[in-house]
Image (cartoon, rainbow, N blue to C red):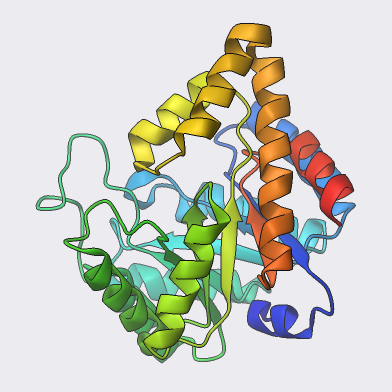
Length: 291
């Protein structure tokens, strides 16, 4: 089903979820077990990522997405990136997915592979996500297209304003909805939406939330994405780690995520897109406390 239609027709605040695809049979079995447990709660939709460089969009990503869509009956979104993708392969991939009943995609530039820079990344016909959005809209007019938004601005953006202009260009190229990168302060999301609305961007903006599960993963995340975190929250997580290790960090992180989601709901966000890192217990706990 068209994801934007699902959002517009949803009478209540919703949760959606993001998975990363398994890379081998052992991982597939765990993925299926976790996905089955999540599917029982009927999230509004499920998204499936693809690797840096676009690796696996026709294998790992598509197999996982089609399992969620056709095996579990979830409205599913397959990620597609510009990396390593030309017009012919993009059209072929979309045709393959459509033949199997999947017609929702998240169009991204994608993460640059290790050892590459923005100047020598494996970009072919699509240098920006807006290029990919435009191609999808021209070749598969009926598809629903999601794109990523960065409340703190993309790390490579010259300014926050130019990053917003690039996001607006993606919407003007044909995107139907925006899913945000993670953030920890709901005020950042509301300010982000307000600035987009002032620029004439009216499509749904779904906030992305990642519950912190360990102190090590938090430090990796901050180093990778450059997402700011308040000193108060960081010190609380650090103290939790010293006090009780990752179990205590998880408790503090989940409590913060629940407060964050409730604030987003009270402020008028349509729903939340969760990044539970393929852990059904994270999704289940969030669901039990906010839905």
